[in-house]
Image (cartoon, rainbow, N blue to C red; front, side):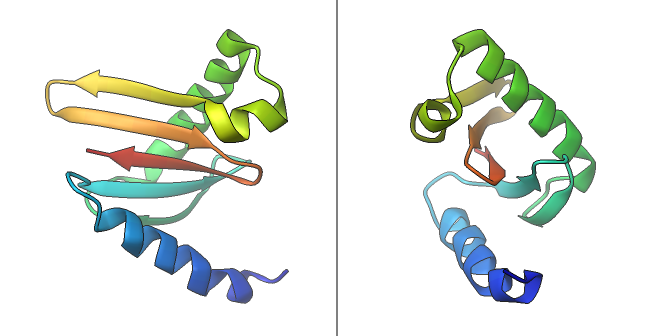
Length: 97
């Protein structure tokens, strides 16, 4: 699958996520920790940290790859809002609320 064929679905997923109540920003990170795409006020530099947090959550929950795709969501709460990190089979999504 080429990158160009992913552009439409990725852009649509980001746009749909941004339309959800309370969402301020969203970032899509690949398995190397690189920012694939983002919307809203989120720095692409956050991508490596999001990958690291996702991996640590996997260790803490001892979830297999199949389980984590459907179950593991990491939530970070701050005084400015919350960040939800969900690991999929190929990408990690960070949603800022």
